[in-house]
Image (tube, rainbow, N blue to C red; front, side, top):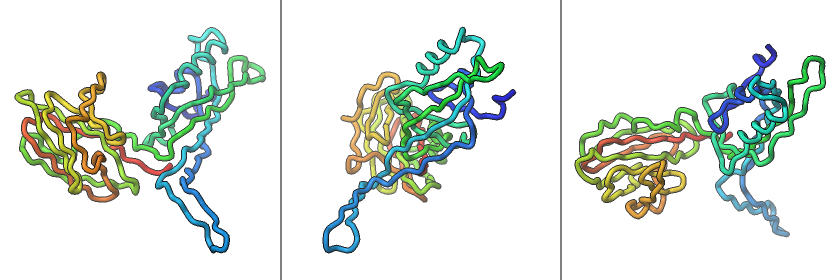
Length: 265
């Protein structure tokens, strides 16, 4: 089968194989461009550099072949289903089968143009390109799931552990703390000496590290930001290398986090 020579991608929680789409590997990988402004001043050797300490988005194009699955009546119905799958209003995780350890954050702004393959016995095949607008940093796949914070053992009032960021990019972890059901909680997370304090948490709290926001629930995102005091208005950051984490407070029933390890694409 010709599709076995190609790979798949996962996007919006669906595999491209669900739509008969197979990706041609290897992909041409884009390189992020540093976000800087260069200014020339007459009479001065060397331009002035204004760095914004960030990178610009990249465009990632995947050449694909599409084999119409049986559940679709014709290619028109299939193309509409593909467009419905790809189009969204925000970034979502994108994973390719040839590099499953790392995820892109991507959005499709223009539906792909898929062209019927004009060959004998190929009346149910399409070819084309799917183009993604991607953030310049990739996220390690195993770091977007809730997991134990180092070797912390919930139960004591002062818990400490060391976590190592093995990339060269700072990570913005998400946090989830839950009471033991006996009383509300007053807690603090201290990372490398910088403390995030939480007061009067009745049941649980989720902290969005990148956006520096706090919520009561992921399904019903009632803001709890008024109950949280961030150090220097920033959520805890895991710098490259060693990170010492201390969690203090009473009536903690659960502590977990998503480290969100990142690397330059």
